[in-house]
Length: 212
Ligand SMILES: C[S@@+](CC[C@H](N)C(=O)[O-])C[C@H]1O[C@@H](n2cnc3c(N)ncnc32)[C@H](O)[C@@H]1O
Picture (cartoon, protein in one colour):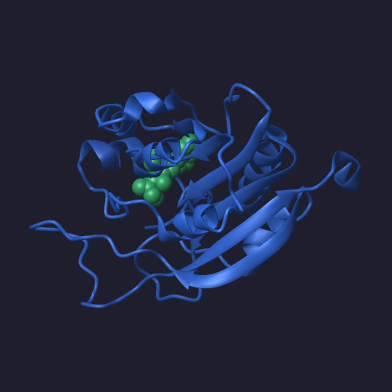
């Protein structure tokens, strides 16, 4: 799956969502368990069917979660406890997100799907504009060090090139995406035990004067 020009709405309509783990992301859970991300007003970008948004809300976060797919958001809103979150339909690259006062941003597989480097830089700049000074962004992306199938893959350099003007990189860890349980007749089959290489990047918004 290339990162460029993915028709996300069509993939959700076709029920082709091999990334949808239906359980909270382990990297996110670790960050919360370590109290690096503490309950606050937060934004999830590309929330898909809302699993992480709902989990975060249940941990006490005030969650605004956005996605450009109406179908994904419909599935998210149908989830138990979805009323704890505010789901917003928006293309993050093109439309504003209400508020610039978030303390934490989470994205799993949204930033990495932005194929053009100019758009990744725009995405990072917009993410920084949504955050308070020193706000955190945890981004989980497929890694270009893995073989060429599965999710979009980006390099460490792609991440830092886009993010560093507005964010300090606090950690950039080579990791693996969580395993997604296969459903019957799943068309997207990975070899048994195969794990998709990934980056977990934790960033802190620079004070404005640092990047202006
Ligand atoms: C690989 S899926 C991951 C979904 C969810 N985070 C998960 O892990 O199940 C990427 C998601 O980002 C959304 N997305 C992609 N580009 C976006 C954009 N520019 N603005 C908002 N959402 C976007 C897609 O609709 C899709 O739901």
